[in-house]
Structure formats: structure tokens, C-alpha cells
Image (cartoon, rainbow, N blue to C red; front, side, top):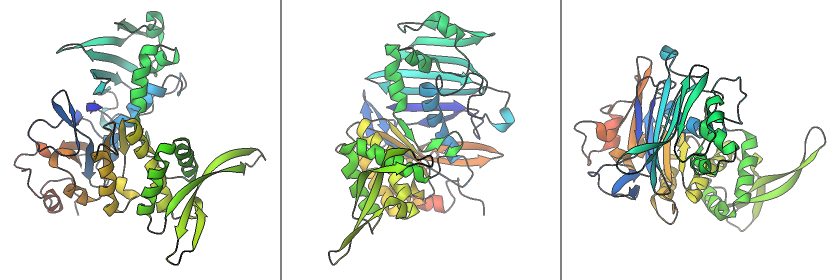
Length: 394
């Protein structure tokens, strides 16, 4: 579970920005609460704001950390820049991340300071009493790194020579350091449709990838099929079949293709391969992949423009999956952006962030940080009237 994330100088956010899942003690308990050691945390957070305000950039730190911690050692050439950008006006300054999370009942803190060229500082801390003590610390000194560790059996010589564009956790995992695996698994449970360039736009190949994922994970195949029947009023169910595909070179390969099953009122039925269904139906099918995977394994789903693929009336249906224990047995979390202000009628003020861009810099705030906003206020009405900010200037 993620407790909070702090970042600075990342894309359009120049100042320190916090995504905080903690509730505090005042909010009325709801189905979206996770309780850990007497503290409460959000299962769901909505991010609302005008076009170009920085909503996608607000989600990118989670997607970036997932990639950097798990894939940077093997997933990027030694001479390549780290794929992110600081704020355009602060390109000579470092970018900073700090994420606090709970793993197997223990609190951890991961810190990362870097430029696109190299890591400046990387550390993992474990809460042992009321304080955090380091598991490892890696700090750039000249051409190499100074490395300190406690109960983390990664070679000091390898760590001090590790190239600057890779995470030490990713490197340790690649060298079969078993102590790194729980952290790799944790960050791998950040599921997102966001990449370094922004939202991962829908492509037809993603339908085949999602179909294979559903086929390989039968425990949520039925849930996907039932949901698609609700999302698309012309669709009754979805079946996934293994077919043989011949590529341009004549090579045959097995692929999984979803078929939509359609029934008529007089009992007739027919099937269509998903490539003949509407683009909205296809993109909703792909969207369900990371969401259902998160619900069934735990972690956090980071979804940009949730309402881009769903009718606004379907958003409450999806949020309910995260609310109830029988559909969310692992206390999975969800953070999403949307353009639908009606979401303010579904969540409380501590579950909503607003994002606004001022003077070419994005700012974000949680609604319960606003002075004078009561728990029983009509958030939707206030937002539509412009009283909360984060609306287009027309």
C-alpha cells in the first residue's frame, strides 16, 4: 500500500508536490478506507482539472518509479539518458522523489534524486521503531558512487561502479539478490496506462495483449465479460479464442482474439471479432486489464482519463469494485484523472485532488486542504460555479 508520494521538478511541476493517501482522523469512515495500525488511507483518489493543467504529469511519478525501480538496469542502454524531463525552467536542477509505502506490514521509504543523465542519490529506508534506518544508501561522488548498506547483500564494489542511469534495486534483482525481489514485486504492482510520453494511446495491438492477459488469468475473465456486457449495451459477453496468425514473412504464431457475443430479443445471436466492435468498446476492454489485475493481486492502478473510455454512468460501477472487500480483497488502490466533474458527487473531499497551471507551473491540492470547505458541501456545485478553482478560463 502506498502512503504518500512527494516529488519536485518533474515535468510541469516545479515545486514540491505531495500525493497523500492518508485520511487523518476527522473524515467520516467510508468504504474507500484502508486501516493500517490505527491510521486510515484512501483506496481511491480522483484528479480533476482543466485541459493542459498537468493532470497526466501528476500521475507520471508513479509510472516513472515503477519503470525506474524495476526495469532501468536491463531496459535502457548504458549511454542513454533517463527518460523523463525536469521543468523547462529548472532544467539545470535535480529532480526528487520520495515514496512511503507498506510492504508485508513494514513501513519503507524510498528516496531518489537524479538528473536525466544520472542518479545523484538513491536510498531505501525501513522503519524499525519510531524512526527510519537505511537499508542502503547510494550517493554520487565524482565518477562513481559512495555506497552504504545494512542487511542488503549487494556487492559494495558493484554498487560503487554501477552506471548512473540505473536503479540499484533493479541491478541487485538482476544479480539475483533475493532481498531486492519484494521491492521489485511491489513496484511491479503499479499498473498504469501512463508512460513517459503521457497517456498510452489506444492501439489495436493492445486488444490482443489484453486478450492474452485475460486468457492467462481465468479468475477475472468472467468479471471482464460481465463488465463489458454492462459497458456496451449491444454486447452480452466476451469470449477469447486462440487463433493462428501469419505475419508478413509467412511465419505462423498463436494469438488470442476476443469475440463479442451479441443476442437479439427474439433469441438470435451472432459474434464479432473485437476488431469489428466500436473503438470505445475496444479501448474499454484494454482499460479493464490493469484495473482487474490490480484488484486481484493488490497494488495501485494509475489510470489517466478514466472517463475517456467509459460513459460517466459507468464510473461509479467501477469505483464500487475498489470499495468492497469481496471485489477488492487485497485493499488495492486507484488514482485516476477524469474530465467528468460528476465524480465529485461520488467521493469525499479528502479523495479528490484539483490540478491547475499558473504561470507555466502546475499546482495540485487536495480538497480537504481548502479553508472553509465543509464535509457536507456540494462539491460538484461549488466546482461548477468556479469556487474551487482548477476550471478552464473561458
